[in-house]
Every structure is written in C-alpha cells, then in structure tokens.
Image (cartoon, rainbow, N blue to C red; front, side):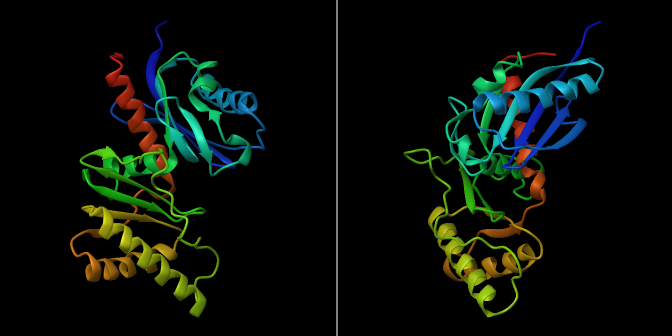
Length: 261
C-alpha cells in the first residue's frame, strides 16, 4: 500500500509543542498539541519532539509519510544550518541542532526558522500582512521580538540577530493605571521609531488581549505623526501565526527541493 505524502509543520515554545499535518496547498489534516518537559540537550529534545511527530503518523494509521517538515523555534535560528543560535525558550536550548536532531528520526527535507520570522511568513500568507513584500511584524508575547521583510526577503542583519527589541518592555498583567499607560506609550514610541527607520507598508502587532486592542490605535497614532504611510494592524493569526508560517516553509522546501507527490 502506497502512503500519502504530507507536509508537517512544527512550532515549539519553552513549554508547548504544536504539530500540524497538511496536504500540499495547506489543507489541514491533523493538529496536535503537547506540553514540553525540561529537555536538557539535543538528544532529549530530539527524542521528545521526534517521538511526538512519529506518534502523529501512527495516529493516522501509517497511511501517510512526510513530504517535507519545517520547524518554528523560539529565538534566533541560523537558517542555513538549522541551529537555534539563541533560545528564548528553555536556556539549555542555546545551540540546539534542530534540523540535524530531527533528521535522526525523519527521512524528509527539513528546515528551521525562528518563531517570529515564521509568524511574519504566516501573516503574509494567510493573515494580516496580506502578501506585502515590505512588512514589519512585532510580537509582544513574552520577550518582545520583531521580524521584517523588505522586497519579500527577510532582514537578518550582519550577525543574524536582527529583530531583537531590548529596549521594549514586556507587557503583562494588569495594564490599567498610570504606570501601565506609560509602558504602553513607551512601547508605542519605540515601535513608531522602528517603523520610521524601516518604512514598511504594514506593521503587524501581536500581543495578549486586551493589550492588542489598546496598542494598535496608539501605535498608529504615533506613526501617523512621525512617519505617515504604514498601516498598523492587529495579527489575524495570533498564537497560530508561527505554525502557519512553518507550514508555508514546508510547502516551499518541498517545491524547491523538487519533491513531488
């Protein structure tokens, strides 16, 4: 019996693993979500994540096989080697060989990218960025981070660290009261400066609700003052953006690698 080749998207944070199995073209077939324990090294991560992926195929009755697989990882990823250079998830994951580790379990083309870059890909494909070739994506869930595409290509910087936002405060908890308003205004000012510097067509913001509802009009107002033109919009995909971006990456690597079904 011939198995049906499918795409696999993986998104993981410090504590959660999401898996998505889909047909070529993006039609979802199966989603799974699992808690992640503390994983001290490459081998432990490989067996945990690789094992969950293998189990997902078992749940399908082994009727399917992996055509291509893409991973969205928490932090900065070297897209050439597929290594997690700096982890914003578990501290032990600095230097995690994401692609190499999964190749021990899965015989298919595999790629990896940082979650923020993957989320921007997802928003451009199926979300709020609407296919824009010049888009800035900012995540304010946990450690603030950003990603930018210019002319359709990700901006990575001279050391591959583009997207860090060390001056932007984390927004969490109760955002009512004077101190919270000051924090929101500070974030809005910093993001408006970044928008003026990079000149995107659209700025996609992602954060917890109701922070997002407060922040989008605030940032738009400051942008209109200092650098009129870019539209500031709320993420359409929310916490699923990185997983959807990983699915697009899997589709791309299957196509570019000459993989056929």
